[in-house]
Image (cartoon, rainbow, N blue to C red):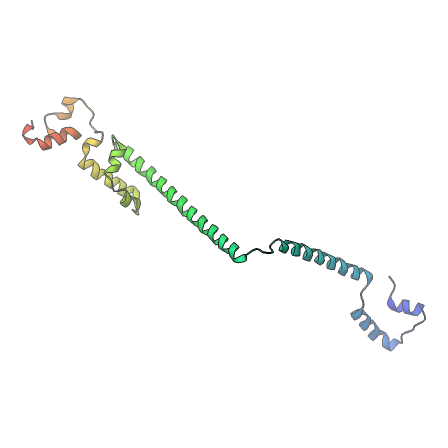
Length: 184
């Protein structure tokens, strides 16, 4: 690419030396090279394509009620929150039941459903220290209803009794409690 001053001198136009600097400044401020113009055209065409794409995408939303969409989005978000809460509650329920079933099994209960019926499950669920409170509640149920639990002393008839009602289990203890006159 030739310099502008060279091009002008080839066609017979001479710029005085004292004006050359002013001419170059004015020329650079107002004119661009072909490569610069081509870059600008490419950028313009790119922006034009982007604008057309955006306009076409917006045409798809013609006639759509934005407030209705916002209402639907809000409804869906609320439904998600409700489902999340529901799942968290189910998980908490499963964890509670697992802890409770483990503690009942460990306590030696003969019938887990019967023991659960005697527990205040709602109070235990809302307890801050569930494991300890479940253990305490089971101890209370066991002390009041010993016949619902297996005995630590599983020996024969004579071995259990050894002549005193204190060595009896569940039903026998209840029998002796109601019939104190039958003590050995």
